[in-house]
Amino acid sequence: MTRPRRRLRLPVDPYILALLGMVVLATLLPARGVAAEAASGASTVVVGLLFFLYGAKLSTREALDGVRHWRLHTTVLACTFVVFPLLGLAARGLVPWLLTPALYSGFLFLCLVPSTIQSSIAFTSMAKGNVPAAICAGSFSSLLGMVLTPLLAVVLLGSSGGGFSADSALKIALQLLAPFLAGQLLRRWIGGFLARHKRIIGFVDRGSILLVVYTAFSQGVVAGIWQQVTWPRLLALLAAEAVLLAVMLSLTWYGAARMGFGRADRIAIQFAGSKKSLAAGLPMATVLFASHASLAVLPLMLFHQMQLMVCAVIAKRRARDPEAVEEPVPVAGPGAA
Image (tube, rainbow, N blue to C red; front, side, top):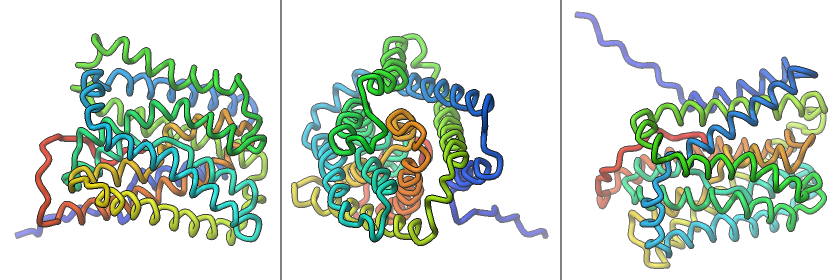
């Protein structure tokens, strides 16, 4: 008898390896000249398509029903747009002895980005938490983030944000909000098709981020990003982000318990309130930071990878809790958003 073949499981999410591969590719073969313009235009198009699909996927009735759970959503929004920015401001004390001013600007920017949608839902489902609440919380955060993130950036980052202006706000609205609203308007006709073909959104989601990462880091390599970031500074940034993630995971879990939320709601709050969206943050950074976007998105990229790995471990442990209740809502695996 032949032994059954065992699947080779990578210790790291293949998508994270793909993200790192884009960074390596941009380092070795950065897009220049006409190729850079083509890559930038393509990334703008695919990100617009991504938010169009998000809008077409989100049920208006589902969003309105979620408003009833206003305490949970208010808690998640407060974590995302109040607690995170306050911790980011507190990290100002790390400059210049631990973080450079440019890295700190990126660190603060990641604290202003909205929460995720795909991965918040996936991890909440994996941990057997309140999946409908996670869907609404992530969606509300992303919608408000299109307005709040640029406003917080101009207030907290000021001139270091690359010269935020009304033109920047208009670009963000046209690239993210307009496609989302168009998707909502057309949902009646294409929503059913997308519900039956969920892989389409997943493919566009991951593909758009890979393209944006390559484009941003190509610009950075041409501008000499790796001459500006040394290994000690990079390790210091990772340490600061590990502390930030640990603090937010603890606050969202134990703070929600103190506020009287049940286990299922606490899981949704922890995963939706402790994470940041790469899909929303990258396009905004390219507008807000212009030619300095590559250095600005580095902290967000590192935090994104860290949160996926840590939250995957936490979700699996939560699923094994004795009081865990099976959640019937099916979702896809952890997304990139």
